[in-house]
Amino acid sequence: MTKAIITVVGRDTVGIIAKVCTWLADNRINILDISQTIVDGFFNMMMIVDVSSLDKTFGDCVTELEVLGREIGVDIHCQKEDIFTKMHRI
Amino acid sequence: MINIFEVNETNKMISQEKLDVRTITMGISLLSCCDSDIDRVCEKVYNRITTMAKDLVATGQEIEKEYGIPIVNKRISVTPISLVGGSACKTPEDFVKLAKTLDAAAKTVGVNFIGGYSALVSKGMTKAEELLIRSIPQALAQTERVCSSVNVGSTKTGLNMDAVRLMGEVVVQTAEATKDADSLGCAKLVIFCNAPDDNPFMAGAFHGVTEADAVIHVGVSGPGVVKRAIEQVRGENFEVLCETIKKTAFKITRVGQLVAQEASRRLGVPFGIIDLSLAPTPAVGDSVAEILEEIGLEQVGGPGTTAALAMLNDQVKKGGVMASSYVGGLSGAFIPVSEDHGMIEAAANGRLCLEKLEAMTCVCSVGLDMIAIPGDTPASTISGIIADEAAIGMVNQKTTAVRLIPVIGKTVGETAEFGGLLGYAPIMPVNRSDCSAFINRTGRIPAPIHSFKN
Image (tube, rainbow over all chains, first blue to last red; front, side):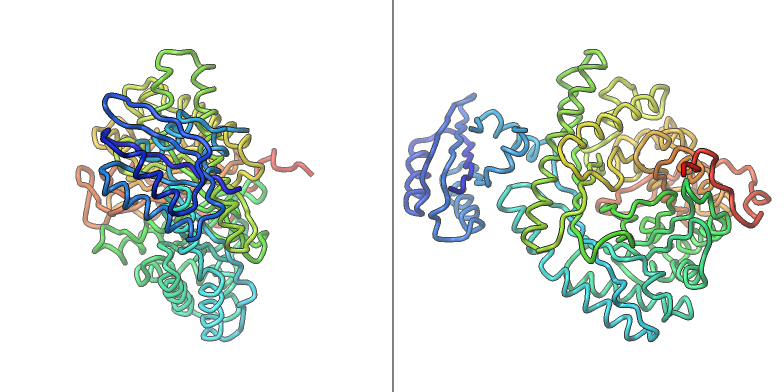
């Protein structure tokens, strides 16, 4: 399993999760966990996903999610999980 | 499993607090390029660098994208060129030819600096080393990306005062040779005592002869992250403050360790060290001076500065060594004047003087760094400053360095502009008391008594 973390931050609007999840399904990315909050009207979501069945490079996935984010009007970042586990776990 | 708060903390460090990997530096040994013919040496050097480092920049960009962490610079350090060109270079011009080759190779592979136009002369100078040193002004004037360093002393060998005298002259000549760009050449020239073999940071990086064929070193930064963390413990005691700095340094270093391991794996080059240095940039919020001010100083340079810096430097190292088994290079807090918004302000309003900076170098990780001084400062005075700084390193068994920029045509009250990460600096006054009779003595200052540990 290759885990990645997707974060979505921006002004709350209808269908953010739907659009992101559809894109993930189309690209064979399995969602393992979702946390989501609204702070001061801002949508803040984190997904832990499995990208081991991804049929494109991880770099392309990062770029496409950024583009999707711009279309929806939110910031989407996709990062390999290691950067977080290395920093926060001994 | 990782939670949303941890993810947000990391991403906030990157997006708002300027956490970055300052450099991935590939060290490349050029010892196999030695030849008696200068053109052959140049050809071998160019081919070796462009082969070994051909994927360095692309790999750096790939890692940057996949982990979402900026990797600001991709750089190369090479074996000290005085050794590589030793048997081929008969004149300073021959060495300049090698410098141009390094510059061309750097441009081909797309790195922004290449370090190692260096000579290690802490005890004595060979003919070739002296030729290289004499070629530095022209080499730095005629190239764009080449960085030069000279090690003039060590705790084990004492100080080579002939080299110290020569370097004062070379600094002035380099300033003259690049006077059209505010003597920018001097920003690419470092004079060391106890130079480390594995420093990834420019301008002092070179690939030491103790190193393997090729190696990946990573320099991480993050003054903004440390500042933001200690803002949360304002007014707390020193134990809480130190714990906060250590924890932050740990987190930053772990990111560097990850990037270093990935770069090493993808490039098929062994991992060397992580250099955890709080390396400021001229941007607001990316300043070591601002950390010291957050610790409790009204402005850097005033009473308390040295103690606060000593504590900061030590906690950064303590947090860092827990995060990686191979912490090396300089690791600590850098205090370059022109590259630090807070230092620039303090120097401009006269609260930070050269003498206080010298005191600060006793407890920080490097030395008198990126300091603009009047263009008419005599070479002997510059040599005197180099000798003072090297003596601090020699006696305290630490690395010290001098990167002074005598800005030709400018004097106290004016500002030198270097551009980009090198920043800008107010010209600082220099004590003009003459030390030429001291500097003109020949020979060496012996190693201190506590160096005899065998």
